[in-house]
Structure formats: structure tokens, C-alpha cells
Image (cartoon, rainbow, N blue to C red; front, side, top):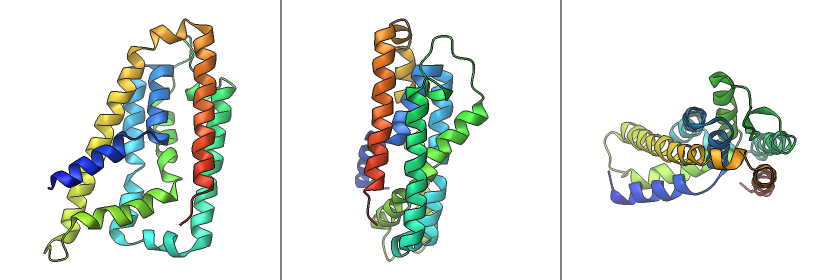
Length: 203
């Protein structure tokens, strides 16, 4: 496995996006355990995109405007829904010291949807993975599966680190109403901006 793949993957995974934002929010709102569950969920959300890339289904999104636009706007709508929930202090994205426990199943479902409803991920992996598999590779499928596994492991570990760090500073945030308000508005604005970025994305 090349150092280029590892470094590129590290940069991609560590870059702020919807998954990182969701994991940070989970850590701040529900603590370390919830952040790890959220990191796991976001990692699971990568699987359909990697499967699409490996099987060539990502090409459909690349060539079909209808398929791409449909999935894209579902993703935009979901990001705006998350922003609204955050701003209105409801659901798992609220940052509240007395928040009721949220089921792992609900956290996982939300985390998976965060990544599944982003068609750019399929196209990204469609272009990304083949760069690190030689055309003369006798076991190309196995190689792509190995690379995908490493990418997912890095995603989980880095997202978990983000989330646990957020959880570690949670006590300094939940006791300060003004900071809570600022955090809620910041998270809501970030989800709106990510939704706008996705809405403007081209194939």
C-alpha cells in the first residue's frame, strides 16, 4: 500500500465535512460514547458509495442527470432538516446538559444518511480508488476492497478522535448559555452552508 494513498486518504478524511460536523455535534451534545457511535455510523455511510465505485455504478450518477439531481437534492433537504433541528434545539444535534439519552440505532441511522445522501461521494471514490490500482494488477477487485477497508478504518479512527475531543470539552460548553447559543447557531449555519455547497455541485 503506497504512502501516497495513506497521505491522500488522511487529508480527505480529516477535512471538515458533514461527517466530521455530525460527529463533533454528537460529542458535544451526548458525550464520548455517542460520538464514537456517530463516527461508526458515518463510516457505514461510506460503504454504499465505495460499493458503487467498485462495481461501476457511480458511472450512472455521472451520466444520468436525473439520478444525480434526485440524490443531490435529497441530501440538501436532509442537511437543511438537520440545521433546523439544531437551531430549534431538538433531536440529537441539540447541545443540552440535560438531554435525554438517544438510542444508538437513531444515531447510526442519522449518521448513515448524512453520507449516503451525498452523490459526490460515489463519484469521488469512482475517480479516487482506481488511481491506486495498477492496470496490470491481477487481483484488482481485492486490491480496491483492501484500499476501501483502510480508508474506512481511517475514517472511523479520525472521526472518533474528533468526537471524543468534542466530548472532553463538553462540560465547559453546556454550563455557558451564551456559548450554547453560539454553538447551536454555528452548527446550523455549517449544515446550511454544506447544503448550499451540495446544491451547487455539478456532476
